[in-house]
Amino acid sequence: MKYFFDGLPADLPETEASLFRSRIDQICQDLIEHYKKDPGDLYLSFGRPNSVSPVPEMKKTLPAQEEETLPGNSLSAVAPKYRFEQLVLPQSVLDDIQHKISLFQLKSKVFEEWGLKEIEPYPRSALNFHGAPGTGKTMAAHAIAQLLGKKIILATYAEIESKYHGDGPKNVKAVFKKAEEEDAILFIDEADSLLSQRLSNVTQGSEQAINSMRSQLLICLEKFSGLVIFSTNFVKQYDKAFETRVSNIEFKMPDADARAKIWKHHLPDTLPLQTDVDVDILAKEIDDICGRDIKNAVIDAALKVAYAQAHNGRTDPIGMADLKDSILRIKAARIKKEGTPLSAEETERIEAQLQAKFRKDKSPAPKKHKGAKRR
Ligand SMILES: Nc1ncnc2c1ncn2[C@@H]1O[C@H](COP(=O)(O)OP(=O)(O)OP(=O)(O)O)[C@@H](O)[C@H]1O
Ligand SMILES: [Mg+2]
Image 1 (cartoon, rainbow, N blue to C red):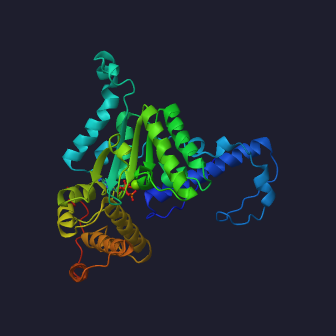
Image 2: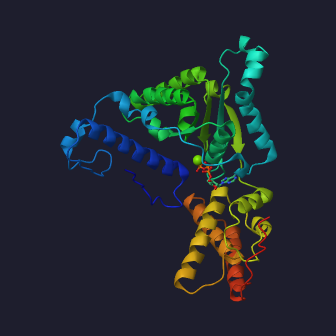
């Protein structure tokens, strides 16, 4: 029997989407296990944490083994979703990544044949991708797994941390164990809190719990023979112990060249485009946007055009005006959501761009479909 859970919103950040997926996955695993042991009536209740279940006796009948609730046992290794060639980053960053992961490609030559295991019996590598949201950190982790021909385990700090004191360190241990067993790349998202400096004046149990997790992480990093990749947005102060063990790679907002390439990568040949679509112009005219903004803009524009074709008699394919409209709105919404009010200049510029777009919209759109400048 196969069930598909569809319907994650297209603009849901990947970290939340993966958290959602892994929770659903865990629920399904629990249900299957439970059902195998005790086939009978099945009740499902969708509440919030700590809400009162309408079927309280169900919880009691679920298998009580502590181990089964650890993320390490519920997170599964999956095939990478992105390829290295899809990743657009400055050449220096790509080289840096290649260099850091070459350990796994050249391990037997350098450590066995050339004897470096004498000085490092446990060759390992840990990376921290840090930078603004939507700049390709999660994508890069997938791309690296693909390049190394390995699966990837996607965990988030929220999954590893436990609201019951003492579970956090166990969970850290469990995800590393799982990655070791599966020979998978371990990706730990939202790891800001994990990599931050351990607290020196611990007054509360929760602070003690965070410190224990960080100490456990250090132990795991020492033992783990695979590649672990952390992703952080903004760590104020790294713990010194991690600073020397984890290599930082910064993901910056893309410049005009990178934006043009990202636009191009997000406009597959099968997408019907008008001839006026020019990724160089899009990249030059609309700055301060991340890769995720571009991806969302393409999806948004495509959906709008497909809808207009289906319901409003539109015949033109996706044009420059559609893409500009979507990206400008997404940019404005993101900036507003991030809580940084738009400066007067920025507001003026975005408004001018929107007005220019609407003026252009009034002129008839070109009809030819072929030859859009995706380059
Ligand atoms: N550098 C990039 N090259 C190509 N595509 C990119 C790049 N950055 C972002 N994208 C596009 O945006 C999507 C989202 O990027 P991704 O999830 O990797 O961002 P992130 O840095 O992990 O963000 P967050 O910090 O919010 O988790 C990718 O799936 C891809 O379509
Ligand atoms: Mg991410």
